[in-house]
Length: 341
Ligand SMILES: NC(=O)c1ccc[n+]([C@@H]2O[C@H](COP(=O)([O-])OP(=O)(O)OC[C@H]3O[C@@H](n4cnc5c(N)ncnc54)[C@H](O)[C@@H]3O)[C@@H](O)[C@H]2O)c1
Image (cartoon, rainbow, N blue to C red; front, side, top):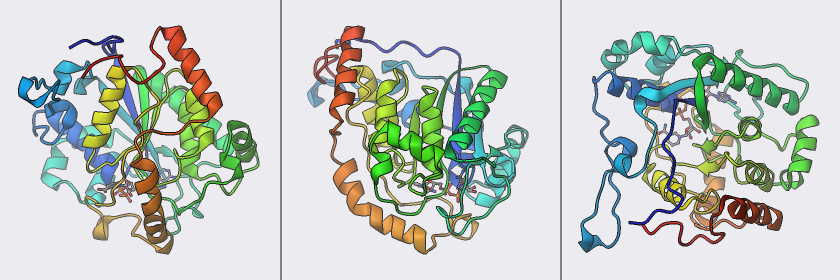
């Protein structure tokens, strides 16, 4: 096995920030803490228990992923997030009703310490929700800057070396790409004018990427499928955009790992988004409304066509910037040959 550009081992604390602290986010946070406290086993966790096949099937080389690639240890992970309700992670997890009260009570003190920051929210994009724990701002740009302040404060308070942001908030209404999404300049003008074509999820993604923080999308929103945010990602050496499926993350994580080994941040980053849900039902805070249902139905063809299409087309300017970055790093520009997996 030859790995050029071998990934460096992660150092220090990894902060995981989730816009949305409902069923998905609190199950994730409580699950990690339960594993750390040895109350639960990490069953189903690709990073903790998954393996990766190397070479041909008959070579029988199947190391565990965590041995193969240096990944953050669970002990190094800290959590933060935003929500439109003030409930701490324990109260939100009880309301979500995914994990048993018995389990949640064993991690209660930990969960109770995680309280959401005020959200960037507008009911226009999630019709059936209204909450009071919401930031006020002149326009989207102002709100994005407030998010960036939150992120900097969190990083300092928790002593994090690295951060990632994962969208775990409600699915937003179906939106089509428009002019404002076409490039970063138009997008930033739209932020300043509070364009209705910019949804809160895009404001979070913009804030994260502006600070060089990778943003992963866990909902079938338009968020990361617009050239403007791809351009912003392209301009950052650190940040990466990703769409992921919170319930069947294997494809996504495999792709992310392969990408990491290859040393590429641009290819194979569209993953398929499924709509199977954990929890939900009576406990779900955003029962599908007309907008939500339309969003789900509306997004399906795009999901299949765009996200299952493995190679993503990038704008020429982005391709040029990536090529220059690869050259600077001494990496091959093509997708081959940074490693043979
Ligand atoms: N539950 C699943 O199995 C599953 C699987 C795949 C994808 N998803 C997606 O993950 C997302 C979350 O699902 P869930 O089951 O946790 O829903 P949920 O309703 O339990 O939680 C969503 C949370 O997001 C908050 N929220 C809404 N808009 C926000 C904003 N702009 N900023 C901050 N917080 C905001 C809500 O107040 C709520 O607490 C949804 O988009 C869903 O489609 C869920």
